[in-house]
Length: 136
Image 1 (cartoon, rainbow, N blue to C red):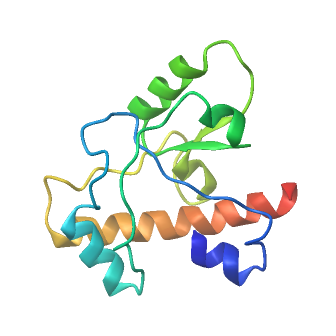
Image 2: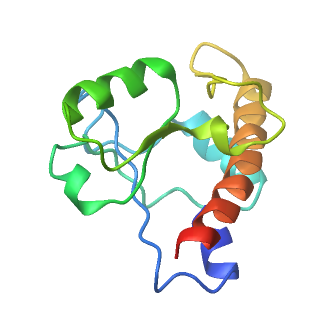
Image 3: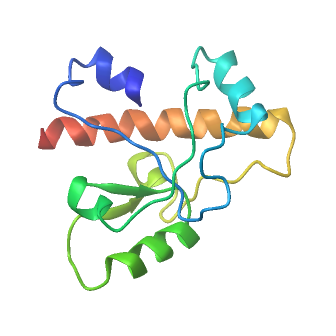
């Protein structure tokens, strides 16, 4: 997504961040298989470190994106009764994905499963960029 935002000339207007809903990987690098799949597509994830989503993030961002329904439910619980910011599933930005589609967790799979997740995320990110262009 960062590459798309930069290529679209929106880097000075769009802030991106990533966080998990759990704390078990805080401070760690992405899974080596994720890094390898990303590298095969020209993405360098070596500088990324996991952090946990915090309640102040709701005030910091205009849109929160969850990869799956379990994380969506956790984020909605954390947000409470507040109506903003919206929380959406990542694949809701992919016009080819069925309603409610999740980004699958490739952790128990093989290299092909990690490549498939990169494909899914690239499609969703293109749709997300189209959405961002309508609001910035």
